[in-house]
Image 1 (cartoon, rainbow, N blue to C red):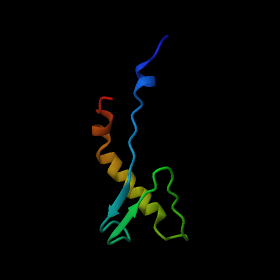
Image 2: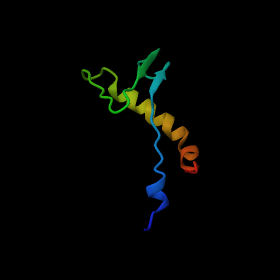
Image 3: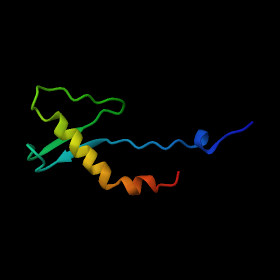
Length: 71
């Protein structure tokens, strides 16, 4: 039986929520994400992309640390 390290330990990182202050049109926003799926729905210009851009910026800041994790 051949078991690879990938099959034994699959790392999982979940974002539980985000707090945004003074980013684009948001002065103070707190969002809690659902465990399995979160959907952003709103009119054009409501800020959906701003939330995703903020999350992407945060992940870029920690990208090197995330890639260096040993699982």
